[in-house]
Amino acid sequence: MPSFRLIPLLLLLIAANARGADWAPTWTAGPPDDARALFYAKRTAVRASDGQALTAHLAFFSSPAYRLKVVDLGAGKEPKYATLTEAFRAEGCLAGVNGGFFHADWRPVGLMVSDQGRTNALERTKLLSGLIYSDAHGVHLLRRGLFRDHAGITALLQTGPYLVDAGRGVRGLSRSKPDPRTFIATDWRGHWVLGATASALSLAELADALASPGALTAWRIDRAINLDGGSSTGFFFDRSDGERPVVLKPWKRVRNLLGVAKR
Image (cartoon, rainbow, N blue to C red; front, side, top):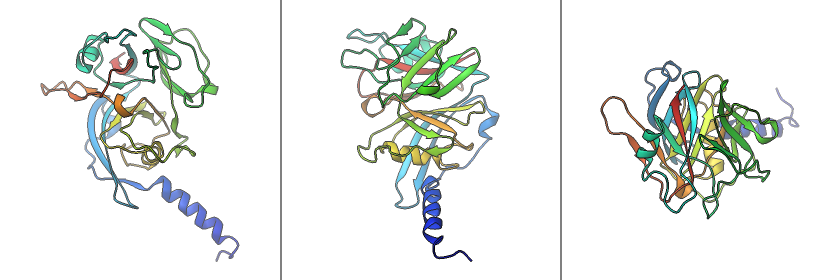
């Protein structure tokens, strides 16, 4: 039987674990998520404490079969492509979301690598805490301090903040300013998901949901990072069965997109 001195510590541990698993799925699992190299799902999770729902459009992909591609829409007043569908199809992407942050003059915030080359430089602001990129070895999501620049990077966005690290929601994220959110997450075993929420929620709430086992993915999320959400939130998935693509249009013009293409 625990001593009274240990009870406060046990209560803190129980509360911490409950916070990480507060969101539960409402969707029914179909074929195993790790059995398909690319697929779309729209899933909803509910927070047990108050019944708040989170619905997200999700593009699952396997990094051995697919890679990331940054679609640069340009810095001009008019984007290179008029719509998400046109942009992703023209660039050979089967799925994708809006990309990283940008300035009022459309310059990307942080380093960007696309087929057009490198734009801007690595920035060390607190917001841009990580990098998502593709090279010949696969797809990578790293904290800024662990990133080592090298030749052969074909697509890269510096973005943030980090949402999940080592399976836990990152502490200190804002619990205010609910907005639609865009993110990318992985189990660090070859399974990845690009997501755009149809629900408005804070960064901390999104981190809690992604760190809750089974809330949106059948596999445990090890790492996740935020992309430019809010009015920039966009999603595309090109279904191959003759159905119309799944499209969530951004409310405003964005600088770049993050797509999924075959290797």
